[in-house]
Length: 247
Image (cartoon, rainbow, N blue to C red):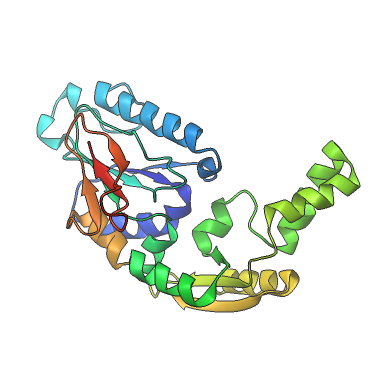
């Protein structure tokens, strides 16, 4: 599994109790801001795994070939099209049919869409996001960004750039809470961020079900895409609700 580090706690929790043989590698958060770089980074990792040249996964070339992987899981949403074009020449790729990683934290694409339709612009928080994101919207991040931008561009430009990072059409700071992961300090962080930004604060109950099914191999076609070796992940223009397809 190759996964964005914003899933660190959630995937680690499920992987620790899974009966499957798993090998999980976490990749730095933030590459979705530059989708070409995300695609290049992931394809580079897939090529190394295909060749047995990566330095972190179990290498079946040296024995125990029955322990080779059945598939490579991609712990990402579509992420600004960063998944498009990805392929493995040796293994099936499995990816959730979601635009955004938040859907996996909430348990389904529908849960995410329903919240979006009723709440509009929302900044999402949870433990993994707060710990692994470069700058979560908050007073702490604003001060850090201000110092960096002021040094580079001057005080007036710094304020403008910070405003561009956090557009004013976001009205809510929502903390996703799983029953299995309880971090009151991060709920408080989100509540304080909402107060600082002049936004409303909400605690949204998450659901580990979809991520758990992903890791356990319950890959129904409605929620997950499974490619065959050599196929690429491409957009599904025939049915936009399916988001991605294999070609």
